[in-house]
Amino acid sequence: MKKKDLISITDYTREDYLRIMELAADFEKNPNQKLLEGKVVATLFFEPSTRTRLSFETAINRLGGRIIGFSDAGSSSVTKGETLHDTIRMVSNYADLIVMRHPLEGSARYAAEVSSVPVINAGDGANQHPTQTLLDMYSILKTQGSLDNINIFMVGDLKYGRTVHSLLMAMSEFKNPIFNFIAPEELEMPQEYKLFLKERGIRYFEHREFTDIISEADIVYMTRVQKERFNDPIEYEKVKNVYVLRNSMLAHTKPNMRILHPLPRVGEIHTDVDANEKAYYFDQARNGVFAREAIIAHTLNLK
Amino acid sequence: MTDKLKKRLKLKVSAINNGTVIDHIPSESLFKVISILGLDKLKTQVTFGFNFESEKLGNKAVVKVADVFFEDDEINKIALIAPHAKLNIIRDYEVIEKRVVEVPDRIVGIVKCFNPKCITNHEEITTHFSVVSKKPIELKCRYCEKITHEDQMVIK
Image 1 (tube, rainbow over the protein chains, first blue to last red):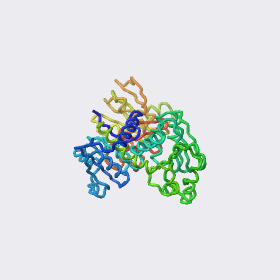
Image 2: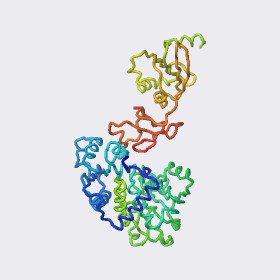
Image 3: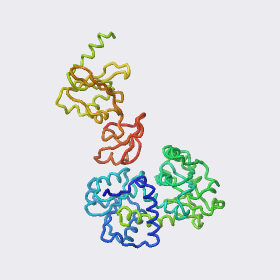
Image 4: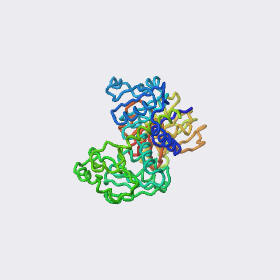
């Protein structure tokens, strides 16, 4: 049987998404299911990402699996000049599943080609981070009761933010989504994604101002505006405080509206939002464990 | 230039009995064409010339390969660097067939991914692209998923 890697969000079909949602809900009800008993999972973090690694390792532990691996390349044979090819060949002899994070784009697809066991991409540079998208979708489903008819406002860095691109593609598989993009000109949604929506007849709107237009939103998806993305530091100073969500802006939003953020945040969500029931970003992180349990179970056909 | 002179110029690259003539190669791409098709490894007679006058290209190169007939898959590899190349298939000194090259749907090797952060630019990996547009050429990397545009194309 062909091994089921998860490298890009587009590796999954609509049926896969729905299966993950179903499994995640099951794991949320009962997180400790010893489906990985007797199995070894390698978590290979060629660059540090504490948040993602802990989420995966929690998921693996809750499934009763054992973990080998490293949390940054400095403590592995990579420092001796070993190629990714050789590291993956070796580890795929030891483990039943590889979870991998790597700073270079395309490294996960390459690892999946080299490996004899399935590979789950936990982020390959600025390219893909599909498990984040699946936990975002699970968060949307949980808070909205459906993945159909969702009006999503994406705010901040829509140019380089891989999470917004993947979420856009995945949500386009469901009925009647509406996208609203709020970004400065230098960080607006790339043409290829707008074209992707146009070709599918999906509605989207672009805005420069972060104002009370969010009153129509079901989901407000905040991202970080990163200083290093700007050629001109003055431009950054101009926009960095324009895209800050404050509690006062939530007064006229819909009761079902929830705020998501892939975290870590810097200043783009004011801390006065945290106490609002519409702030969902910490619950979203918790959903990550259930989503990753679901992805592992699906990948290894454990359920 | 008179027709007579033109004819004489053509004859500077000697005629072949059987084989393939690849015409209308941009002069600057000649050695890349030779390397992509592996003509330098052939044991049969290969003659080539470049900086010939061409109405279409300004100047062009021509390669004549004796006793070799290319499959479409093989010859289409040069479409990226010699999009206007024309093939004359020769039998008994006669052109029996003319063919043009076409950009294939997939490109394996040949082109470098433009993305400096792509894994293919850091390890010994054969590049794989799907061709998302043929005119202008746009290649999507199987690994980093970024698009290499025609003006960013670097031949390996």
